[in-house]
Image (cartoon, rainbow, N blue to C red; front, side, top):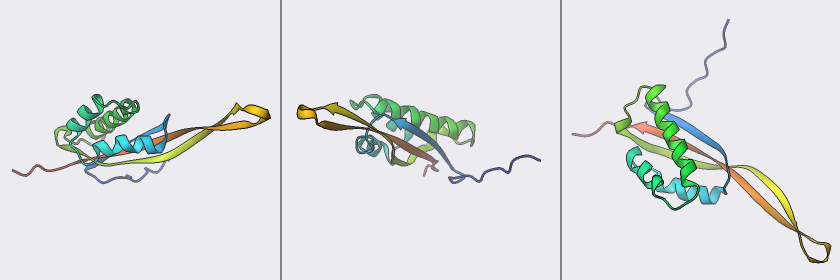
Length: 126
């Protein structure tokens, strides 16, 4: 009597990876996710490697994880993978405060976000 296997959340020719608790705002993270949407994974990795954005390193780690999932868990060919979807969501927002003049408080919000990357295997047209 084992546990029932969960159904796949993505298609048979797709693999997914998620990065959670990334210390940046979703708006900034979405700018980096926009750079890699629809591109071949090799090109996306190169763009993330040489990007000047601080969060590009975290996105690169998630993309590498999605590629590893595709290769090891779903037996997909890594040379024919493209970034099918890359979407960003909100996560925790730490609320801090800073003392201001006359006994007042200045609110500081420190947002976290999460990114989901789905890679898909495409058939090359000859």
